[in-house]
Image 1 (cartoon, helix red, strand yellow):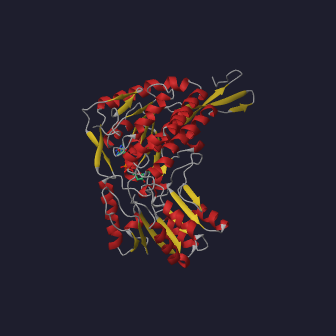
Image 2 (cartoon, protein in one colour):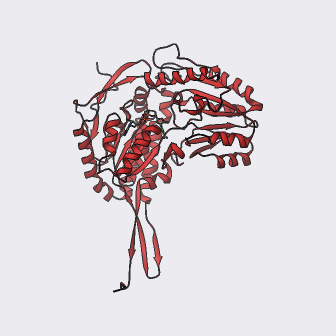
Image 3 (tube, helix red, strand yellow):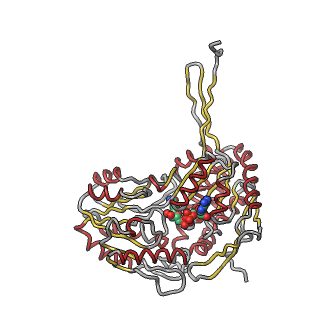
Length: 485
Ligand code: NAD
């Protein structure tokens, strides 16, 4: 019997599901059991061509609609997503293995927020009037054209909407390639946009591995590429986009610092560290995986952290009581287990976890290492799994320098009751998305993105509009033209 997660077909182009079984089969594995629940096929060159030509043709008419009309469609899509939240969340749980407790509140809902927010902004995307005596300049905010979105596997619905909603609000069309690990959810986003009244062809989904992504990025018809992925992939995609002078948004990895001063409320700080390391089983780019704790509260912090981490409920992701799910794939599980072994071998002190959980599926116990030092591999490399490194520090000056000593710069957090210090420390940290006495909040109203190797551009908020549109300026002369000859 066909599993309910099996989509009608692999791709969604020009308003309908499209199949081409000549592409490489991509098995969809449910991470909680290891069972294959669906198959999709990587896009063949013919499918890529169909998606790009469709999106190119549809864009001009879409951009000619008023912002109010475009916005209405996006807001309708947001309403449909919210009405179908349960069904979409179940699908996302099948796609990623993340517990339903999370997917019900953090994926389709956050996708719907983006559709609603950018739907609301669409009608207000105007230019300026610049008076120059009798003459004047006016500016127009125009669409970029055809945009490509490429997703990571941790938030497949959210990423499809965080890219699609601002792109469409500005009058662009999109071809979106989900991660090959989680190909299911973006198809639903495409389906819902059509149901909401979007013209066929403005949001298309094609499946495939990196090579399909690369063929989209290098196509001369593509004007912009927005990638969510790792730094090595980001470097390749950025370079390929530069060849064609294309616009880019790069949302990449991190190894973010979370700094806890000795005056902090311990339970709030522990809560922040848990949210910043164990949500989605640690598969979150902005995670605060280097937790710097001031020496005076170190043992108290570790004791409370171990106690609360022990309350995580590992189990069937479809059971809403489960608060901690498996790694997305067996491969990712093995990568993370390799880092745990490195942590042990390099002399970090294991506080809790430290092994695969004794159950079916790709579960790793939430793991905390203490006495981690700056040079250890687990303190330097992005693990993308439930492994928290706790490091000690003495002074503010020291911790800021150590926090910044990384190629990454996605996020940073600070816990302290001293607000002057909180703002000073955040001001000195090299990171794009920061938190004071909190961690990992990502409201659509706030810009999201990194500095240094963690990325270029911003998603969400009014900032995203700048990255999906361009300004045309028009000089208007009222009098005669003077010329030298
Ligand atoms: P990945 O870099 O392996 O893949 C990301 C996407 O890029 C996939 O869809 C993949 O098929 C595609 N891709 C790979 N090579 C390509 C190429 N040469 N050209 C075009 N596309 C190509 O990342 P992943 O393992 O799916 O996701 C985990 C990474 O993503 C982590 O580093 C994480 O930090 C990062 N991430 C960042 C954010 C953010 O918003 N900053 C959010 C989620 C995940």
